[in-house]
Length: 407
Ligand code: ASP
Ligand code: MG
Image (cartoon, rainbow, N blue to C red; front, side, top):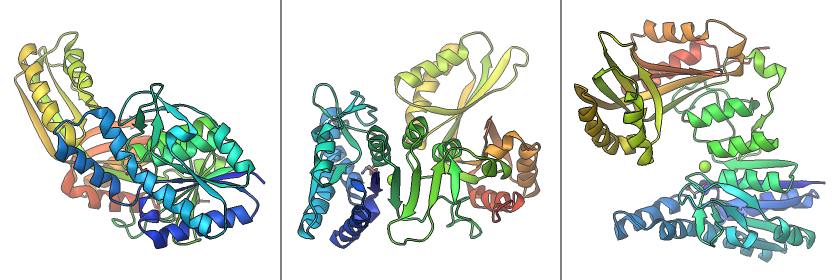
């Protein structure tokens, strides 16, 4: 029998009782004959607490020290789990990122894994240990501790599964799988039995919180089957895997939303080559990522340009864009953070026509004004007024009949 990687999120390790539950899940796989690697997050709320501490110590904490600090939550959970497993008569060993050697680049707060040395883990597995690895962290060439971005334990787990050629990677969380949309908003939301890597990636990037987008990218690249399942029940689960015929028959697989959006419009810009570059270069230099961009067709030599950023970046983006707007002779800058992005996702879009029209018509029938639109092959996103988020999701879910599986 092969290797299984199990990852448990913060709510699954929030206290000792829950950690015992995790131990039982690991033991079950072990007793079934598998080699087992468990990847853990910090206890729920712990990473936030550490981040707050860092910011109460200094407005702009030193990044190296910051990553060292916020990675400590995982040290607590992996050691506790190992202690519990050992006390239950199972050999277990915890590993921090540097002890495995999960090598990353030096981009603190959002480091990328470049290599995993599998030697130490393999030695322990050979001895029969359950190996427990800290998620979310790695180490760079200079031995600095790095972190992989919020939600990064998912990526740690998939990366380990890829490096050690695991049979599968089970992501245990507080929901029992991936749903067609947020069940808290739409009571008819349906759990998907499976979803393609590409759809899951679009869902994760447009607001579904269940998996870190990078983990999905990595799963796709190395062809790692990922199961999203609940820590608290054995029912359900969603398989994230390669696209198949069945998936194409469904027009859509899901609807996501993102309320963490702010819209910035630069009005009446003299239209000449280089205006977009002069607006967006200073933003990228400040590490502000821009999501949607729309430039209007120019009229009488002038144009408007609208784009969205994450809410936390709005103030800084506004300041930055106002400075550029002056330089390039634009009339003014308008900002609006009372917006949300609603997206529909599905590989079936490629082969079904009229999907966009149906989306727009459905929203028009409810008098929901669309402020911005962007599309990819398998996704259509609309920015709308924030107060219509729930309504848009509910009517779209009905219109595309997502509550039932299409055969
Ligand atoms: N503990 C880290 C976070 O809260 C990593 C994770 O949970 O995946 O972002
Ligand atoms: Mg998570």
